[in-house]
Picture 1 (tube, rainbow, N blue to C red):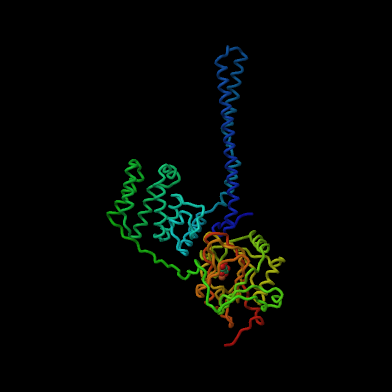
Picture 2 (cartoon, helix red, strand yellow):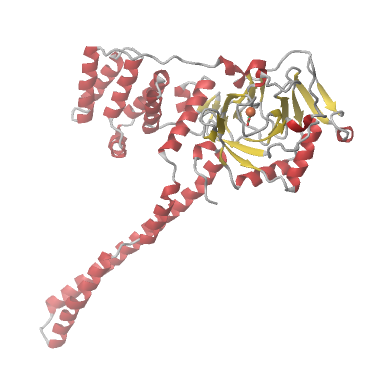
Length: 488
Ligand SMILES: O=C(O)CCC(=O)C(=O)O
Ligand SMILES: [Fe+2]
């Protein structure tokens, strides 16, 4: 399958990128084999040529020996030259270059770093813990390298988050200091002490913090490496900025959303709510009642438990996997759908004529008692690295002239999420953590067809896991008899 790039937008497609990686490694290995064969062959030529010289030196200048020498010089050397001029491993190099355009781009890298930053911000994580692979108290198989720490810090500084940049550059510097044996290697890869210290100073300047510490650690380091020019240069600059005492730049205000507190812990509303077996929404439910948890009465939000079977969910994901593309949002100013950093997920629409999808439609009617006529198709979403959907309403109230308004939303959870990824309603103090097979339903419009602001919601950033959901946005227009408009 041709991958639809935007790798940071879907954990599933990021996994697919692994297959590219395997092909690339195979090419590289074959390339090395070809080179090795060449070296072996040239070695054996050297032996043969040496042997011929030895024989020529011993010859009696009899005509057959002269002929042998002549033939050797006339024939063998041009032959060897021809061989040396051949490019070995051309096919393998071409194979690698063919995949070049499928490699992640700078944009992909930036979006990945943006995902990291989002996780760190929303869940209030500590940079030095993250650098050790410790996320929300769970240890993962990761520890940062000086280069990675530096890259993260550099982007954080670029985005003006100097406080977080400081954590990461400190970690990078500590690792670098402890890793003297690798300094040449780092330098080769493009990371010098100068880079590290310069960024450190830039970050401290912007935090208007004391520069005594970098200055003294650097002087210490320089004592051990008196010949390191990069260090010397960095020290001069550091001393200069220390003397001048550069003005700290205006610190960007931290717009911490305590709004999204409910991303980190499960928020549930008052005591008058309860669970029941829903047997009334449609006649079918009398035969097969659904376990329903009432989460909010106004606006109406319910969670159905154990609705989907594993087999159904696997199939739904499989059907969507084929053509996941980056999800878009409607931009009212530009009057078109476009990529949006507020929605970092990939989406695939499902074919409504498929049997399973028809069954999903019936199930949705059973749960909602709404008519799905002219509703948008089911959409399966797989979230990306730190993937989220910032706070938004699902209703339009005319903001999107292309679509009729959405009276209700049904959100099917097709996977569990080990860490993060709750759906939150910040104005309701409500959060729902994904549970595979459950379905969340809420009304977006009130009985007069007006959007209810309280239904604004968000998908919190995924910390760990591949988060799959399926949405059904229900069209308001055909609900005349199902959910009639009420007068005040
Ligand atoms: O994935 C979620 O939890 C929410 C998705 C959502 O709000 C949407 O797609 O409109
Ligand atoms: Fe939504």
